[in-house]
Image 1 (cartoon, rainbow, N blue to C red):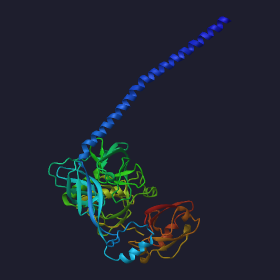
Image 2: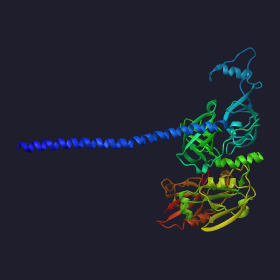
Image 3: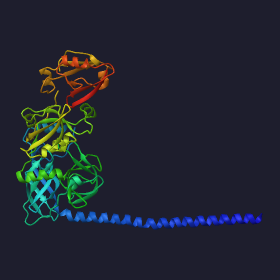
Image 4: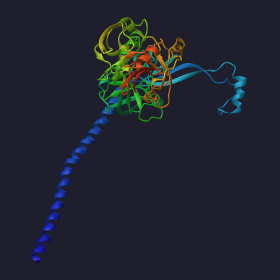
Length: 487
């Protein structure tokens, strides 16, 4: 018995020793594999750090500080011999100065702005933002080596916030190569070089956070979003990839949004820069249509499965699309063989096409494919108006409608009086539940035109109990949409 117990204790000790040895073995193996991994990670970090250093040293000389001055007026004139200090907003003396001295001529002063830019060739052409130099009567460019030059504006484009200026160098200048912004990937490392807050040649690093951002700054928004710090004074500076090429022009920040900056894609800028250099202005193609994106309901209404296409909401009389035969309600699917995904993309395609060039426009009209050859004209600053009532009410589905009159059409900025306008809805009715609103203009029901109340009654009367109708409406300030109406 005693021998048996001794044997059991022996086995326990052996097992414990074996576990210790096994644990030591695992630790040794993990150390064997972990140390090289840590060393590799450290090596990658050092390599990245060296790359950033190399890129900054190579490209900083081509980044310039831009100081623009312009005349301005403002402020209350001073009294000779009296030094006026700052006053609180509600100080009663403020009224005194305004009353007795505010009527005289205002004091002229010089407005100054500071921004960045980058040299693109040895001839002294510099790319920057339009808002950095707009209205300037004097522009000073300061290089990294502290050389200063007076600059002239060669051309500006407010729609994309780009400008091209030029200095006349006494010798060859350092320049940066333009890259390919279409090849950028989210998560890719980039560097921003500029003069934030007037601090010369500051370099910040970050990644590409997103592409194709629309921030409401203009009709051609297509920004690169990055978390590389872009601060006041960085405007116009380059966004550089790890190959040392410009992929964007730093442009905008969101107030209070840390780590959110925007840059103009260099591929969008290339054509504009060329036009500014050659002609001093930008000319864009013009199709002459009002357009909007397809909502899920519109896709279902038109039977669009892949989601491609843009709806033509309006055709301007006498403009290229009208002359070629394009009509409101057409879906533009392709331009010169390239698929159209959104209204913004279509606008960009047409704008970038040369004026006078014939564009092949593929459309879908009531289920049939058609192709038009449209000779593009020069785009003008035309405001695309919204299309958009009079009382004789009908209450099917709880919807009260009225014929459109010329007076109502003018009130809603409409080009015609086709359709009926919704003038009221019964609370809890099928129309209200479906999402129809007062002011909506009903143009079609189940793909049949509604020109007036008589036609509206005819089409609405065809809907049987339990059926779903598709109501094609124009909502002023929103565009066309489809609402499902169930009886």
